[in-house]
Length: 511
Image (cartoon, rainbow, N blue to C red; front, side):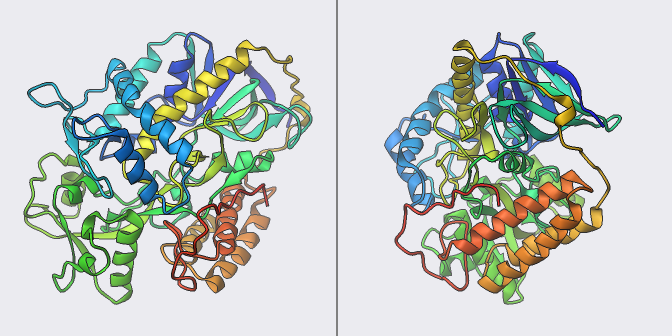
């Protein structure tokens, strides 16, 4: 079936989370198409962000301290120049978000109220009045701003599946994107010389995740199939405290709870994190996740004890616990590690540029070098906001300098087969959790690669979504197998100690 050329513009943004909407707003008044499967304000990972956004705005804080904490959490693999640039820019973007209508919580003097999260030396996480509802407030404000900006056209109900390039699927300048219209299944093209991928993370590749299930690394798959460089896929961050109450995805117990003094206990009532790290519950997320995993491997259940702290400002926790018949003021809350954030992705520079001419990436789908092997808490929303805007500024310069007219050959685009393969998807998610999860080893990863390759072969030509999931899962497993050390979010039982190779990264083209 020949694709229909639906529309053209100077810029197409794929994704409607914080990075995508921030980019669209920054590009105004230039006409921009924002493509999304969902209607404006629909569920996305940005919306589910609970804790807040990190920025050195407190009187006792500093850029140097924020930089040092970010580098320390990153386990020697962050790009120091990128860290400094984004951390220095963060306070400016707090003010920009306030102008867009984000209602940050302030004290009686008008200063921002700040909380402290794991690995932060200072209180520097800005919150909103709803406590753990930061993402909802952020996305409410950005969505309202987008809907009130005439130059931004929001196109919902489309699944973006492939990047269109001038001379074919894997060569030449970017010319737009090939999509599936979800209403009728027809293939449509949105043409543009500048495409920004802001498609979010990949938690949906795992059986245990706090991410929306549509977060399956689709942007990474599209970029890889188009020939872009992909970086550091093995660095997957597992949030140590998602509620173990049988929900998929699992509801998150924000790290801010531990910042306020909540404890982790095992079935014997022991605060086991004291045995793993001097910062106990406030150790880096990878350390805490491994601590819980070790307890679970010993047959212990793991719990978050919030009974001694004020949880009234954490309505998401209260609501999720209530669904399981629990009350944080009275009961221990069962928790387990689950995929929460991906540090790797499409390799970009400080302007969000990918390795393909005309392609940018921002947010969780990008690998800027900020997070390295392990993300510092609440730096992700900061990165999405700052890099969404920086990519937009670079795209504006690109468009102003001029570009060759689009060359769109609708008949030459690949088919977009769509056959339900839910059983294969379920199998894939369990392979990733069981064999490429919190703790990995050589045999398990080799088994995973073999099994995923079989699933991918069955899906290619039958279901693009499942094929893309398998492609990204296989790249993660191969990257993890190739990194013969334990570092940050990547832990191998056969390489227990990190080697001194901070310059190591796993930038790779498509397999």
